[in-house]
Length: 609
Image (cartoon, rainbow, N blue to C red):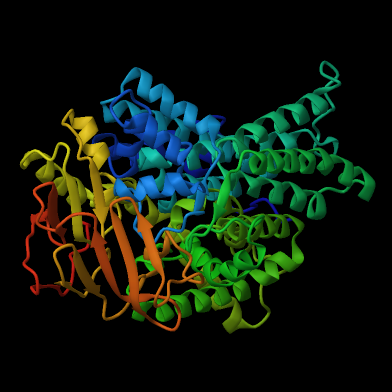
């Protein structure tokens, strides 16, 4: 175990580290840093959540199609086709697409918002900040359960409190589930640690059964965590790692301690499957239970990116958003930085039982986070282990621990690495955290475009056809935006093409047009949300939905369509059809004659203030 600091830090640091109110002070500082998010309003899925949890027209249908605020598709073919005709998903979505997540505890908090302040954003943000306040406080208590009131705890808890990776999930109302799951999960792990007799849990004569009560409370908290978000499974990794590397009881005793948690995990998973929840058919969401081989390949690609985003910059989501040509470079940087971290931390992990616990928990958390596309908002659980390791490494260098490299050059490099990591997460992260908390507001152009659409001519009862939109959100939020504004919704919404372009569209008949994507559809990973590219579309395949038929005319060898013909059930210039293109700031009306071409060279990314 790493030694507790025997040095002499400044008196104010010692008082802060040993003070009983450290968890409260850290929670206050962290909450103040993310508090600018109180004023950023609603963004993206927030609109859909408000719509489906309201009594406004179309809300109940949207909730049925999504099954919960944390879904996209329920695996039912009829429901998928209905979504396509409403612009909620693209025409290439497979009939059996399933992205339906079971988070009833988190959903209950959104239903509370809908009941108390359905059209006011700041109270919803305030609730998210409250959960974050509680999370930071309980994380500090967890570190104290290991190291007591020491500077080691101060470094680890301080890094966790102000880390910029937490900002996005705190600032986006729809992502509150990550904060709630982390709070209950960390609290459950804390109770587990305190329930163990070898760490002094049951020595109090007044409460001889304190350990048993804490174990029951731990199981209850972890149940709430699993019902708040799937990421809470990571806490099971920490509990198993604690039994393997930290506890000193007999093997049978440790196994019996872990068994109830494994039973809980199994019961949760069985209920999850029986309810038909999970993911399949998507290129971004991979369910380890349903697609183990696909998940394994995803781990190989995504884990280095998440680890890099955990410790360094830029954030891991840059990889998914980047142009395809930049992705190999970003993956190479992530692999290099991860390898350097492994070399830096290995001497500590090899020599220290608690370091092995933090490392194993972190790696388990990162592995589980690979079930969806890399994003720093997935790192609440991984951060527990990461900052425990950073704090121990930093302390080891201060004290000249025995595990440090023997060679002068290696020791100097290790010292610089330690100082750089602590500096990044204790000094730079507090500056980045407010920006990260407000970063969802960078999608403001999407909402300005929706406002422009609402301010335009009435679309009540019309069929709106987007020839092209830069992002899925630009069409999937149309119905919700109309419903929330009180305006009559379009009868149908179709999206024919998405992405950055280029695109060539040519009308080839009264009811038909052809689209040509020179670089193919699904060029970027973010575009594979609604279809796994391993199950592509090839020449000759036909996709039929009410009012529209799509035939693939050409595709790449990998099954990415490059040319398709769209045939509507009415003439393209029928008054009931309202044509738009949204590759700029706002949707623009569009019309074209038979034989006329429309070219879109490069759509503007829907990002900005």
